[in-house]
Length: 212
Image (cartoon, rainbow, N blue to C red; front, side):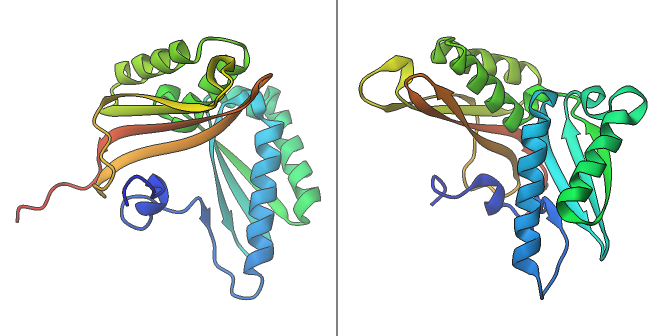
């Protein structure tokens, strides 16, 4: 079971919380679609800003977005011009008041999303996939992670037959709920086809062991 369960979904309500924080009985599906639309738009719009996570909170007439990024200056712009422009753009999509907060990711090497995106861009730029994977693991472990696993699937190195290769270092518990595991999956589009990259990063344990 542990190998097939999404590491973040598996820990929701135990040590992880939801990325969208709101509830609506009547128009749940339309708001969920709106969330997906906002996230997709921001990801595309802020492609070079190193966005790791987008948190969404809602009140009746207002949407509050918290963008976690490794390059906050890129999102905010000169004296807040970019962020005001972003708020207006999302306001046009949703027809609601929008407030954007920006949080800096101090250690991008410990964000699975950012690490996976770096590996994906390196593979797209024809860097050897083994080298990209091993470099990422070295950098992340140096920043204090307890363990890391990287998996690449597809026509690796332009091979005729698709295969999967993975490297791991340290500990990546699959079923320990108290383990704080960050997970991300990104697709790299190469001339040979799509290559899937999955990254697991274990940052330690959030809940202390019980004394029983």
